[in-house]
Amino acid sequence: MAKATVSLGPEGYRTIIKSRDHEYIADEPLDEGGTDSGPMPTEMLLGALGACIAVTCRLYAERKKWPLEGVDVSLDSERFKGKDYADYDGDELFVHEIRKSISFKGDDLTDDQRERLLEIAGKCPVHRLIALPTFFKETLVDDIFADDEAEPLVRD
Image 1 (cartoon, one colour):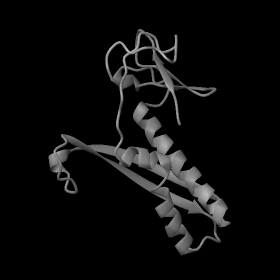
Image 2 (image 1 turned 90 degrees about the vertical axis):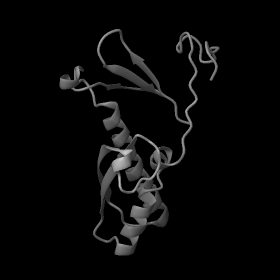
Image 3 (image 1 turned 45 degrees about the vertical axis):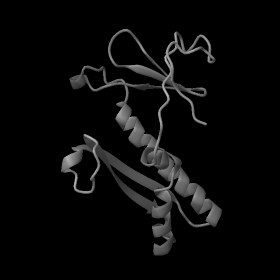
């Protein structure tokens, strides 16, 4: 199970994110009112997806004893109006398209191995988290940091 806590101060958009023993920063660009002291949350999401793709492919290649020397992933996303997106016929106001370009390093990799790695890339845990149905359960608490077992102020 993954876990993170996020703190936003009284001014601006700079947030401090903590996961296990790690601390990192998210922010908004200057032209959006931020201080640009870290990547935007959407950039962090794309970074997490790219990292997960690379690690998942490395793990798979190691298990298969394939000569994968490295993985480069480039990602970008764009939001479209749902009614204007040709591949979508649902009722959502907006849909998002994530475009991935992946390069597998290793001169001795076969074309079949590269194709299989591309397939595996689409099955990494972060990709599944984004693509498969995900359900959000919100709980309003008085102070998250005071007690991890805090009673909710409102129902889930």
